[in-house]
Each structure stands twice: as C-alpha cells, then as structure tokens.
Image (tube, rainbow, N blue to C red; front, side, top):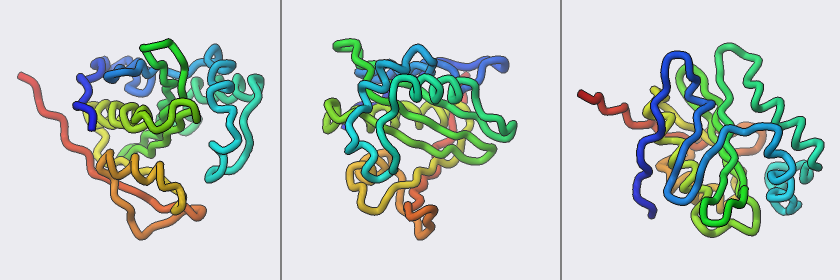
Length: 186
C-alpha cells in the first residue's frame, strides 16, 4: 500500500477541479489534451486492454479526436468530465489515464494503464490520487462499473475502498464508496 498522496492543488471558483494537474508519489496526472494522442495510442495499443470493454486500440488519429472531445468537456452542464493522462516521472513515459465523470452527488471513475506498466500499482496510485482530489473538492460518492471477470480492476476498486453493490449496468457490477468529507483548514 502506498502512503496517501499529498493534497492536490487548490482550485479557485474560476478553475474547474477537473482541469488541474495532480501529482502522486510516482506520477504526474496531466489534464488530457490532443497533443497526448500519439503517445497515449502507443501506450494503449495492446488489444488485450479491450477484453472487458470491447472495441479496439485507437489509431493516433482516433485518439487525437477522442482527446480533443474529452478535453472540451461534457456537453451536459450537470456534469463535468475529468480526464488525466499518467506521466511516470522516473522515465517520462505516458502510461495510461484516469477519468471521472463528476455529477452533483457522485463521480464515476475509470482507469486504464498500458500493459507494459501493469502490476506496479500505478492504476491504484493514480485512482487514489484522483479520489483524494475529488473528496477535497466536495464529491461525496465514488462509483466504478467493472466487468465481473475483470479481477485486476476489482482489486483496484477494493484498494480504493469501493465495494460491489447488487446493481449492474451493461453487464458490469456497480462498485461504490462514500468519500470522506474534507477537513476544514483554519
């Protein structure tokens, strides 16, 4: 288990909590941008990453369009999209991403780390940093939808304090946790 990350940057009323860079022990979590597309497409090129989610590895052009769409934010004013690429500080490699769809009461999380960087705790570290940031900015509930056979993602969810619920959506189990309230500073 990694130590709790240092608190992320504070946000001002004009700064969205979904567009600030974050930092963990080994990673820089950078707001996604189209210029990350080529490197992100290469990091996520293994077809095995799509075993539980479907689809195929994105080409650099497809990834550029996706990054631009995600960076533009949600078209729904009731939610915010937060998407961060994961830059490993040790060697500068872009290793994957974490994301949160933040609504009035909850944030839905997702995480993907490229095959060469798996089994190092990077997804857990990045998602834990994201959860701490979301809790500090007022999010009270975190959820994730995980395929019942995706044991690695279930282990990450458990490490984050999420618990499976009896609810499913599109064949995936809803995992959920109540986030701690931020401690007021004096």
